[in-house]
Length: 91
Image (cartoon, rainbow, N blue to C red; front, side, top):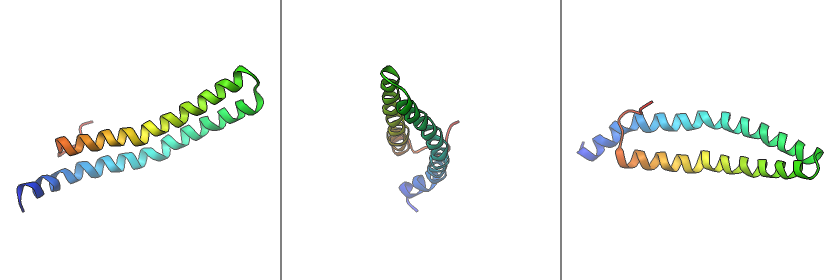
């Protein structure tokens, strides 16, 4: 086994831990954001004027948060793992 293969094998547990963490967090993040989005939909349906505007803003914020939480954060962590090749994941 060459040095490159050993580094990848040593980094595998860290990568597996990060992947498992993102997978487990997915359900919790989706649950909380879907619940808030339902509240925004109810506010939009029942409310008038500024309340409807708040509901729309809340919905856009939820969508933005989901995009950031899943896509950007995972990309940043993947870049960190690729560059630093950690053997363990710091808590």
